[in-house]
Length: 314
Image 1: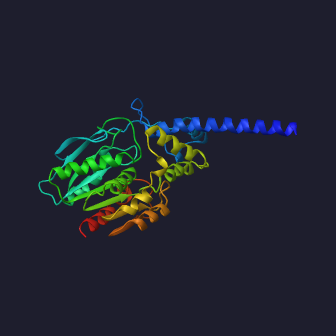
Image 2 (image 1 turned 90 degrees about the vertical axis):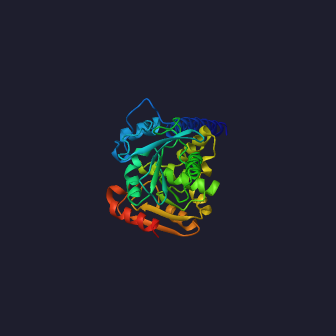
Image 3 (image 1 turned 135 degrees about the vertical axis):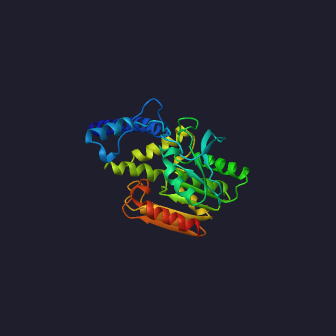
């Protein structure tokens, strides 16, 4: 009996130490994931490009997460607009001689508005103004923080409100990945009276998108993914377990185009199907057979342009 008690005490201590160590690692990972570092330039390579030793290093010490900077500027005449939101955000407003409306463009995680210029070009050729937005922590906007679409939803509203104050009535919201999630939360929270929204590869829940990053590295996601979501929310003052675009989609009533690459390792087809099923009103789902979690224009520019054109001219 005495030996048994000693064994259980040692087991308890071992498990407690392991639990504490895992949470310490998760705390630092969560901070690096939600805070960009302006002092470094090189981002950690994708999991598929890492050696086993490099994967272990990332697993224990986190990723290099440099602050996103705009790498180029529009070739057309444009106006730089600064908006007061939860942070000061910077936008590029590109207006052709005449337009039939405006598309507001929101980038993905660790992106910035210059990465969306190729897509803005398509909308411009279709006759739309474009307003490209840097979320907080990126490009010309304030801060180094990101909440993967949670507080960014307020910035979606701020961009929409700015266009409304300019007299624009025909507004479409376009977002990729995190940008799509931010749009969905904005529609859930504010029911913005937009003409339509276009969503590229939005994740289903915050937990699922963190779990997918473990899966791409071929390591178990439980319980570390859960710890990361908890600490990420704690550090940024929100419940990250409730950051749930699948739930947000139940309150989307405007015309919606949902786009998805069938080779996406970060967002599952089931997540996309759940979102699509929940959306009310007119909706379309377009898929790209060989595309992953990437810019669809790289492999499917013609099809993407056709899908966008058909939807907007419907």
